[in-house]
Image (cartoon, rainbow, N blue to C red; front, side, top):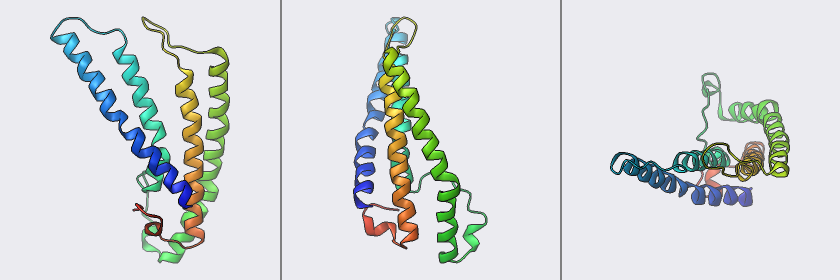
Length: 166
C-alpha cells in the first residue's frame, strides 16, 4: 500500500508541473495572436494534448487524496465500521469492474493507435499514440490506487498512516 501510494504521489507531483507548461503555451499563443497578429499553428493542439495528459494522469493521485466526487448522503449517517464496509463494497461492485474495463479498453485503444502511428489531422500533425498510451498507464495507476484504498478499508488502516493522506 505504501509503494502504491508513493508511486501515485510521485506521479501526481511530477505531472502537476505540466499545468505551468500548458499555461505558458496558452499565454504565448494569446500574445502572438493579439499582440503580433501571428497566431501559432501548434499551440492549441499541444496545450489541448498536455491538458488531456495532465487530467487523466492525476486520477490515481486524486483517489489517493479522496478528491473524486462522492455522494455521501446515506453513508455519512452510518457508524465508522458500517461506512468502511459500505465503501469497501462500493469498490468491489463499482470501482473494480470500471477500472478493469478502463484498463483493458485503454490498452486496446493505445495499441491500435501505436500500431497505426496515429497523428492528429490539420495544420500540424502531432502524434496521438503517446497520449493514448498515457491513458492506459493512468488506468493502471487508478486501479493500483483503488487496490490500496480498498486494502486500507478492509484492514482498517488510516490514510494518515501512509503519509500525505487526507
